[in-house]
Image (cartoon, rainbow, N blue to C red; front, side, top):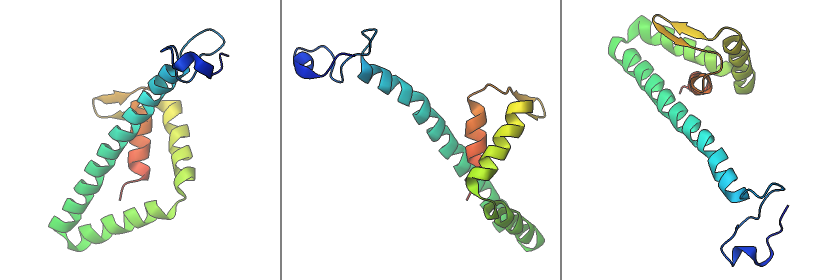
Length: 121
């Protein structure tokens, strides 16, 4: 570990370095990249699901609106973290297959889909 000290003034490392001499700030920024990508994609996926559900319920109305509203009410009744953990366990074990689309269990798209389903408005 290299302490901050005067090293950042000399242009070396702003947050210091780890025991192997790697820049801590660069590693933090690179680690945050996957979080930003997953959260951005999950937000877009949730927006698409919520908009589609609202358009279908508004266009057809009647029984379709009632059934879709009750389904979303049931989905919202579950604790969010418990539902996310349950979906994670199921999808990690088997992956997701929807028609010709298959998402493997180690894919970064699984958290996007799980967060999108759990947080659909």
